[in-house]
Length: 92
Image 1 (tube, helix red, strand yellow):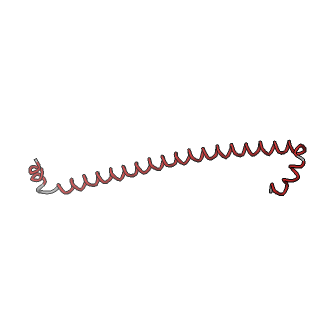
Image 2 (image 1 turned 45 degrees about the vertical axis):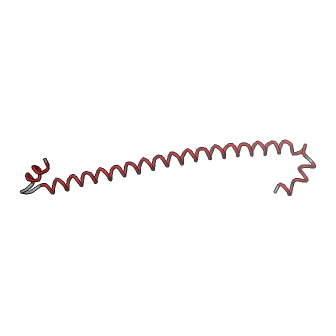
């Protein structure tokens, strides 16, 4: 696009000086905002990864707790019955 108007702008730089400055300022502002947005997106990505990792750890811990409880329950049920006291005596 600039190539189409380059000759006119270069020939009349003084006439377009204020508009050129305005465009340069706008470009700087856009660049700053873009950089700021990218930094925010990166922080959000890291925060999301931390939250997901925490949730995964909690889920894993919960599964482990359920597994331990089930193993305990199975062992206790396996010991009930007529020979449970014999099992206890043999373990000592």
